[in-house]
Image (tube, rainbow, N blue to C red; front, side, top):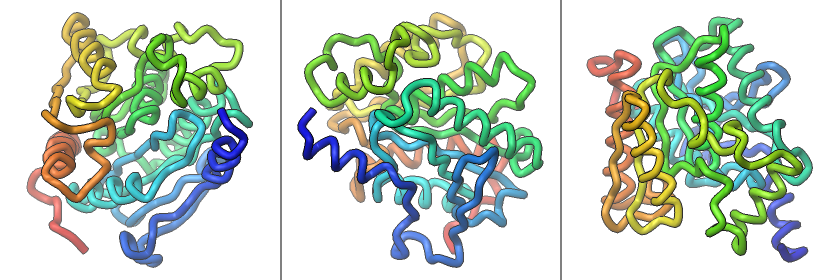
Length: 274
């Protein structure tokens, strides 16, 4: 990894806020839950329902404008609050910092009754989707309440794949995993227990590098008898749910929004906007 690219990645690791054009400042609030920064969009709606999102970025980069656009639209069209957990990133903070941050934040949110049982879903894109799946596996075996559903956009769920060895994702995998074997399910949740999870809703693009992860996860869910749906969008890329506007992103978002509404019982209450 070049020095310039490394510096750019490190510069992108500070938690951001959604652009004003996406969400007016009055709709946004930064809080700490379990000492972890969380940015809320429409926090007053948390008493109704919440979409908790984990951003992509290969565990080394923070949320992008596209991530904020996805969370704002998905939450607004579902009639829910949106919450972005700003977990720590490599190379400054390697595994297990990211998963510990998410678990600490969710534990605090549940203890504070900010997240209502059956009224929140856990969402993620790319690395964030893999992290969401790993978190859900830990929650399923713990006393902390699980989400009503998982929304997984182009998930990166197998950090052992040799195809990534020569690109940025392969470097990021090494920086994030450190000395821990990448076969650990908390790093590669595809290799973990999948049978006792909340319903998972998986969307991938057929032209994305991560499409094979999505297909293998779909097959593993089926083999485990797990409740899940998989939408593979022909012609879509890895960020099919994030990059828009366009027919591919809107198809992906509709799929995930409808899944969130059903899971949180919001079919009849979701509003069209603010």
